[in-house]
View (cartoon, one colour):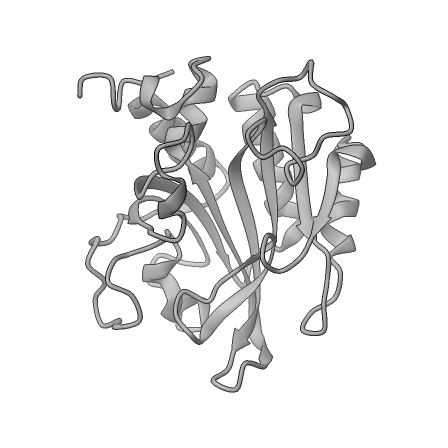
Length: 251
């Protein structure tokens, strides 16, 4: 599957799940001085994640071009880029964790053919700001992911946002693909990140970070997800780095 086909497959899948397909935003953020570039698919949607009604409804999906420099020291390995495409689906006060995780699992395993036993997931371990996300882990187990393939990690790993110093944020659950299923069975995405490629991140936006570094509950809970186009098609094409796909080979 090439990138163009994969992109459309994703959008068609979420359209079939009742999502309105919206356009991507400019790489230069409008009316937002918190960052220089659009850093994630959710970035242009911050007003709607904070409660403003979106004209297209409560279920949205799109493909957003992003520039992110958080990982710039890792660019040059097999999986990190500064410029990339992020496929995303959102629930603005509609579905919550169970349906979001179920749709992610269905798309990966049924539409893309990922083997369930090669998936690993991580969930938020909890801290003074928010509790341990046992709910997400329970949902993964109900879908057949064994406890040995679920890892709880702290905020540095399993929490998204806000984009700037304040704004919507929350715990997330991340999905990884095992690139070496013959490797030691006790390895995890934390212990061997080179073996497990992160492909998707389901964020449960339920907090609004304040200027005093406290976290206030949002009036409406939202779901924000991001699926990396370049990493996913590299897996689908059976290559060992992003740079071996048709997106980079002509260069």
